[in-house]
Length: 288
Ligand code: SAH
Image 1 (tube, rainbow, N blue to C red):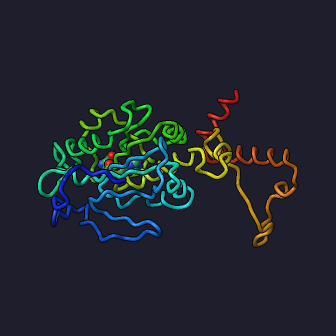
Image 2: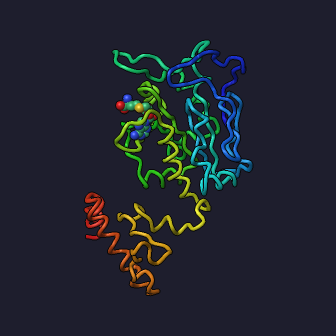
């Protein structure tokens, strides 16, 4: 459900068109889901909400970007079944004044705009309602290229919590004071800069939600794949056995499970050594 503060509907900033926030588009259909980018509370594909199910709360200027890809396939089905839930909190209504301004120019000068501490704090306070204050049980995260890199370990930690709150930045980011005051961890999707945190949020939620029991049909597959140990996954093949003159490695069709396991292990080692010397060194150190 989208959470919004108690502002009258007509408080919507009429004609407020900041560069990064076009006026709300008309209702759009995303397949079976109807999504509107308005102040109306929205329930994102969770007709049944399982009590105590893992929950992602997203603070964003673009709630219409959700569930996005998370509404598809396995994560989408699990969302519809209530195995996890997704709340978007629109930042705009927490803004200042008639135009609900959420940002201002950087102190000390320079290009771009910075999301205001007071505005973000109001949204964070709302996001905190009903969530445990213990950050281990409910991490509160600012998506930021300056953050610690997201990893499979991060996904495991978040999946073990009751839920997470993700604050999506835009423009130049968020006033540091609110990050300090709210015990927020900064997490990065990688060493590149995007225009906003929404794609990073979806990537991280996807990686986390698939670790929740029942979300993947075959739970064992999360134990074998890349990053669960310290090796990258071996290559995969499927029918046809010969495609454009290229054969599936014969051992995989041999039915000899011990040999298959040996082949997969040696391919995983080869790929890891070739592509990721950092992981390979960790693997060797772990064995020694
Ligand atoms: N001036 C900032 C970049 C701002 S990009 C800097 O140099 O650090 C605008 C917003 O996009 C950020 O606040 C963040 O929420 C999001 N973002 C951009 N790249 C990201 C990344 N690699 N990981 C996570 N979030 C990112």
